Image (cartoon, rainbow, N blue to C red; front, side, top):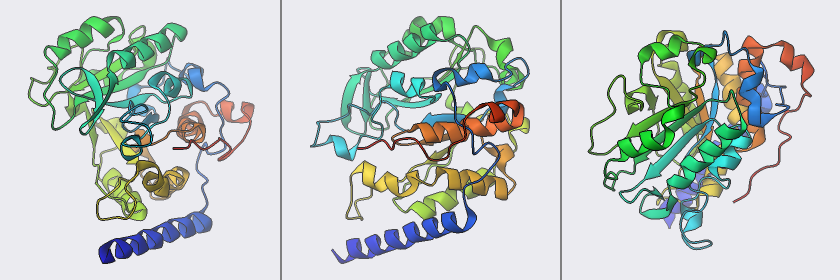
Length: 330
């Protein structure tokens, strides 16, 4: 009990520090006033004929298919990181997804399982059928304590083949227009099966990197994200995607072990993080930014950066707003 009280005090200190930083420094960065007029098709408004894959700031989600994980009111609060389905996340503008599975092709988070991953793929295909120029990064990995589904790579290609962008380092230098009609980067990260090889329709995990740390301390995670991002090469010199997760993770050492109240400690500071990235001169390293319980304001913040760089005329055309979106609840 004493350790938990100490941890809660530390959490309180870090929350206060983050809020004070926000009040002192503000949340203004290039494109911070942008609101997507059509989040379902925001990529189609960009100059895809000149915009390169490496140049986009991709908004995404963490543990993306956990919306129906576990048993409601019993195990779900300890594992759910998103309230929306994959299709609903796509419609509000998310474009990068973190999908965990087990040997029966069921979505999972740790030991808890949910629906078949087929539902995720169907959501992506439905979204593609309704749009023409939206691109997606879909990471699918076998959760650490599970076995790989048999022949899963072949099955993925059979299901998604018409959309798949083949694994090729030169792709990062290509424009989005050059890739059409292909629109899907599918990263397959098995536990024991062979990783996808160069030229495969699937991408290996070597092309999607991050430096996730397991902590429920919001300012610790905030500063860790900045530190690791600063260590990356600029986007225009590297041939992999780099992901930053604006999340906090429940710990057994803390008095709170449900996902929503813990990740909420950092979730409201995504715009502060982006402000700090520009302040430190490392915005040229920012590429994929993800959060739990994704909301529209987070999407607008990420998209706004790309718009400010490559389509500044859209800033004047779109209504200005900051933090106006409704917060998702647990």
